[in-house]
Length: 318
Image 1 (cartoon, rainbow, N blue to C red):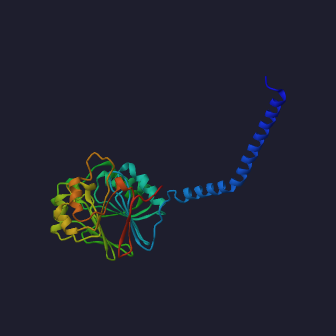
Image 2 (tube, helix red, strand yellow):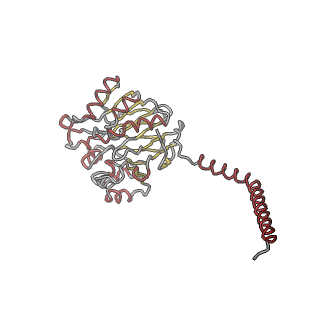
Image 3 (cartoon, rainbow, N blue to C red):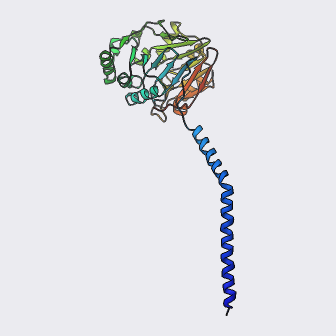
């Protein structure tokens, strides 16, 4: 049997050791506390500074933003004097597009340009007309036999009339001045086409040495007509037609426009197989600088008149 005195001493020694350990832990904590606070502050600062923030528009340059609207088109053109929107995405994208424009500080559009009145390019127009003032609405010249009777087209026309928006059909070669840049409309006699895509209203955007070509959903017959009319020349950036369809961006077309870079507006895992691998192979014969909204989200192009800088995955949260 152990001596009670020894047991008592052991308990006292154990208690003393526990007190010493607590004291050491407390002293360590007190000495480490400033470093812990500093570390937490650094982590917070890093997280705060790296958080997604809306981009800001620079009024000293030409900015073109291809908005990610899934399987559709919507492209903002901004200068210090003008805001132009080319296409609006489908009907489920109109509110989102308007909110993203507002997040960029845009509360009015000088022009809303519809490349052609298919829903994935025009569907969002009604919501945009409801949510912000629009100066002028441009449509392509559509043959009577191809004029749509869809709800998105009729709603857009009704709202434009209700809001007092000027509706125009530009002629080929008509120019819109955006201050530091110009838009030149491209079109031919659309009565020759049986496909609404081929009636697409084209835009040649120029700023200094740079040019950006927007082609709507132009397909083979339309490209051939544009080439025969002598409308095309080498460009800095090509917006590939029809979401990268194999029926667009053909060999002869590419031989003429010779893009230094290309962008494609296309929905992720879409049912059409866009962009076509054959089209991408044709395109890569001219450039490896290819951006796609399904992979790159919102795509920003900034021209200073000498070069175009393209930035993928820019954050715009409305």
